[in-house]
Image: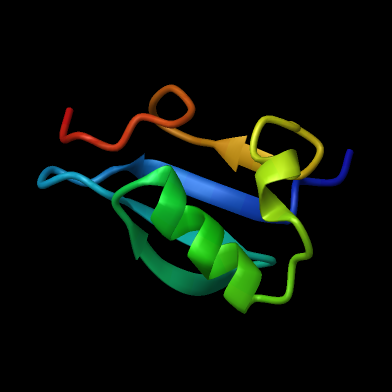
Length: 70
């Protein structure tokens, strides 16, 4: 089974989540809006449509779209 190309990692203690695409770190996102900006910058067309698709995005260590510190 192939892993999704986009990984939104677990929440950091201060909030925000690291975002990687194919193992390349894009940055630390603090909201869906920031995540979309990272993905657009990585060349993904219409990234909003893939956020809830497990074939595209793996949300680790917390529920999807959760950005506040645990």
